[in-house]
Image (cartoon, rainbow, N blue to C red; front, side, top):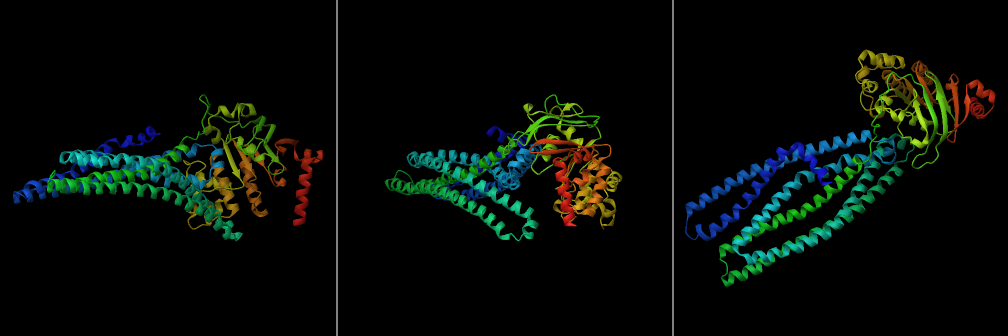
Length: 577
């Protein structure tokens, strides 16, 4: 993991070297004051060297000015390096997320993923910036101050140094408790973010059902867990700091007693004793810095581990010899397909279905029967194992086709339309980002949405809000259809594309869908059976199996499950009317 972490320093190697050199100079300049103090007390003041006293003071002041500039350099450019590292990690993480399979997002809440991208990486970058500086400056200061203390009185120095092993033992002991506590705290923080993300996204549902109290309770539950884990984390931190601070305080007590006795016995002079006290602080301060660094180190390491957890998730990958899907005719075949989710076994059982080029096949049946799963398997959103059958397009197994070329040739219109925050144009262009304005408008016309867009003050530049909240359900659906028109795929999947619409809007959208289906091989998942009467073939899917197949008329005549579903639906429609 260390090698992986250090790799993010490589693009900033030169600046990092300058940063470390500046930190080194800061440490060296820090040793000037006790040296000058010793000279002042032992030589310049007793010998009344007033001119030398002034010159020494001016030199120290000049060095402190240089140290100020060096501190500015370290603080500014060190943080700049950290920001660039954080940016690169965030890009790597986001890019990796885009390549992960559906199963990852099925098992991980959006809010928790957001935490990995934001607060976790902030802690990592704080370690990346301050870690090397703290280690270098503190280590050098400890070595220099210890070396200088020995020149004053080696016995006093060894007395102080004897406390260091005790400090190390206490630090290691407390660090284990801190590590566990802060990891729990991070997990609970992710739970809060997930709760907030879920509640804000579903705020309209919350208001519609007046479930404010339920959402507040869910949030408070996560918040209480965060508070509880914070108690444990800060309790461990409190023990850590109080113990280590006590030991460093003991340093001063030993110096006070031993130094006083040595001064009384004449072993050291008053000037040396005063210098020793000043120099001891130069030794204790970096020790305390290293102790404080342990907290930052713990935060950064736990954040980087969580970063690595996602980066180590296996992304979607093409086979080494995968082919690009070209000149697509659109023939589809499901051959002996079986499939199970991680939490749901036996979703599909030995499904065989062949769809000729340009034909429309509808999948109908009760919810949970496996219709949508078939639609998800076709673009290879979920991987089909070798032993679970095969799905072929134009005779080629989709596992042998590159994912990009496969999905480029498949258009999907779903019941739950997802639109991105931005303009109408942005969302249509998502189908093909390099399309011209004329092509965008033509796609909108074919989707029966152009005339509506023209009535808007800003036309295609109208902002639609998060997930298209400023549009009606029908308008959102027609925008998604326009997006597919622009993409111009050879294969089309319509997953209950009209089930949530009113009759008038459904007519408009059905016209657009009929236009969209022309010349394309189409797989339709239908809730309203009236919309698929003209399908070339209808397959009744129940409990993961195709129970009946045929045209509408053939299935009605067969007097099986389809007829029952059809009769039931129209009886319900009659009752509604």
